[in-house]
Length: 212
Image (cartoon, rainbow, N blue to C red; front, side):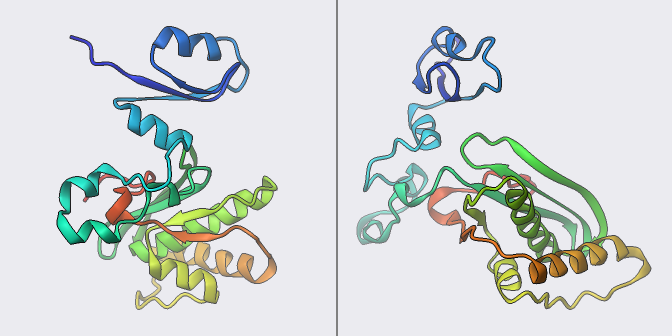
């Protein structure tokens, strides 16, 4: 038996939530630059489209918390769906580091840096934020940027990277990028809010590599 799907159309003849593939297809077939995504639940589709009413909470926490703990939950509508999110992955510590950024609403990957040797997750997170800032500035966009790394956010704000990792011939690539990132921050202004992703209430950040 085929499970029902819900379709969020972000760009098409008509945008919004559609409950059948045929209705969704009518909006996107032959439409230049069409953007859509299918979801297993109506709730997920509504979150992606920003149709969440005030006070509705993400179900992951409703299931996990009981009693008084639920009084302090963050309303789901506090998540700005029209945004960019970034994340990094490090296999080992130090180890091979890669990072990427995507549009939060559509999960479309907008940049992805291939693995670099002998780095740390924090360095990757820092580079991901700066990459997103530079990309959005080139696009003339002031979309907010979500990161789940407080350390990287501080480094960006202070324009200073405080890593204990020693620079060697094996990690020149990542350190060279860090230097470029710091130089970009010194020479550019931006208006994009850099916001902390609330993993506890919203689940893993969409840009997560799923390697935990």
